[in-house]
Image (cartoon, rainbow, N blue to C red; front, top):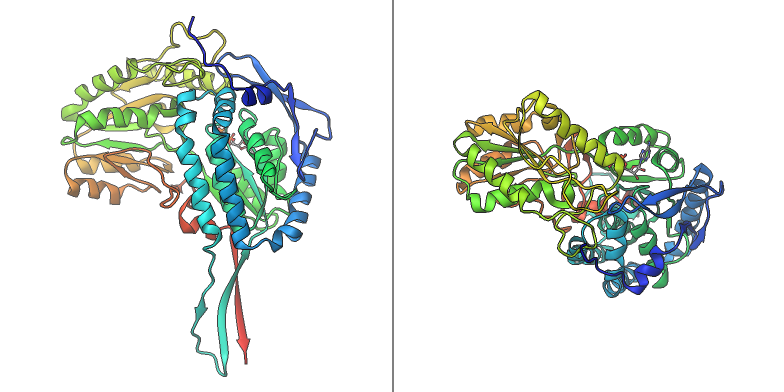
Length: 496
Ligand code: ADP
């Protein structure tokens, strides 16, 4: 029997609660309907706790609280005050990070080694947004108007932001929204995913512990079809930041029409990871493997289509399979686990469905494809899986699996790799592995995607940002442009 790491006292206290309410206007409150939904521990399949099932009327009161805060005292907070709040958030989360890592691992199943390793990424993102709070600038422009007219632009926060996020890493993904909103002076209603809401609830509690005014950030847990849909369609929400599936993204776009909401959408992906004949395979193989397997493949920009030059495709497929076989899959609180379970039974069934249909379409299973032996009964585990001899038109190469499944697709020329890489509805990430800078740049420039990596995969710095094109959505995350999108611009003409 594997020895599991014990919870620290703070995480144990939070996780032992049988039910968690909504956070509205600085207070915890049950859903008005009194209903709740089960939240499961992916490592065991047991019920972890219950979450209030927010209904439309709960979203309405959360939006009302966010509107009141936006127009109330929060609107008089100076940029330096908002920056200081974010710096305090950085310090408080840093001091209590172990508690958050444990809550996240228990809730969505990522191994504790991974959630611990995310510490710097979470804290640096908060620091980035803290810097942006004091970096909001309009412009003065010359003009050709008659008379003595001065022209300039003013920036102001867009208002109430609805944040709808998925379950694959809420501890970090909530900060793309909270950080930008707090830096810009907006207020927020968060709707975390029903499978992983706990780190959002705990982070927002922590923000109140360091002086966040009531109503500035509210959390409505519940289902996407009810709470998410109401938030996306709410006439008093000015902006929605959404990360999730392309299908839901379409619904969010439709719902936004009611009041012309501004949107930021990070949707699905089927990113190409291209290994050229001259690549350093000692880097490319583990890089491409972990470009898919990281977080058990539950990453929007996973490089799940690995294109390999035909001259090395057999060697690379075997080495990817060997890499996959060496990965320890297990309970989130087993410190030796490199990958944890998938987030839910539904996700496990979805991944096993794709693994099941691939051979019938001609893909060859090179490694994995099964449940790991000896993993806790009831947990949602699957071994990292490699399929060779995949064709770009097969189902596993077209549809987003969101699991640890690599499709190896051979190619003969760089031009063909580019053409195949672009043959997808998505455009989120992508990479090229090569020792030749000219070939690498050719690929970088030709792949239609929001982000490209060269001889690495998945690096992200909020200062630089990343985004998507095509059906992967729009609106960059990170960089100055991100905060700019939380600001409205007013043109001012002054005649004197
Ligand atoms: P995933 O496949 O990653 O779960 P979803 O798009 O289903 O992606 O879910 C992402 C987030 O969107 C979750 O918080 C979910 O509850 C929410 N959601 C799902 N359906 C809707 C909807 N119709 N309107 C708004 N939010 C939704």
